[in-house]
Image (cartoon, rainbow, N blue to C red; front, side, top):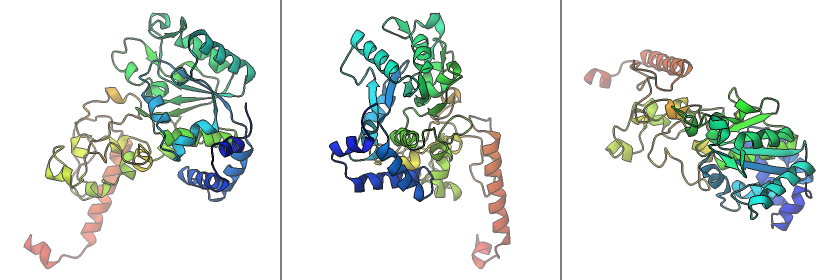
Length: 359
């Protein structure tokens, strides 16, 4: 553990005013009351930077790339001023025995206090031989590091749910962090890769309140994963008016119409992509013209054809499409059906006009 966070930020040229604005914005994004911004600032200013040990296992390094892709002075750029990153193979200067010694030293000095971040799945096949560090399996290292951790953050869909390595036929026997660790608080930040600001929010919450944020039934921070992509999507009005792109380069696609019929999984995918966006808030997949793949949901790779429409209603006011379920839940279908009934009832109450008779 090092000095108070506010001292570290001051050395980086971050003013108190900027810090207060940051905390207020973060509190708002996490659906906390207005007064929480000041409370968060006071708590974080006095807090000492927690030791963080980051273990990259069976992964593609995309999660690390995402989180370190800072656009200073955005929220993402502050993450490494908020923590003391004592071990991360990809980012640290040390290598080999020196790197492993640094990890053991940090674990010993901060036993019971450090945050453990894990990205990548854990392979169990062949006694863990598919992924090893320093001659030791990921499974062995995870169990050792988890023992002294205060809490664990599973970054990315691979760590949270097994991800692509776990997809059928799962040749390496990949599993998630929560499949292994049962006695520690774990927060899942899924995504392939995850949204950087979500990680910042989780760390800020931990610094402020000494606990993990409120989680949903899949272990995700409810503030960021409480709504679907569809609920937050700027193309949603086109969906409600039955305007859908038929191909990725037709007139509808160029006009920004809904990508539902091209396989967008937004209606059944929970994440903050539509509001937090990527690359400093520049854009996100749907805005760039591609439907959501549902990558923050468990087993998304095995859910079916990415370009086949879900079986929820495509035209709520008039019909319900009966098709095989591809990743959609009964709850989602029921929600769309209820919306269709309400829209139909509203139309039925509207008076008939001369224009209607001419149709």
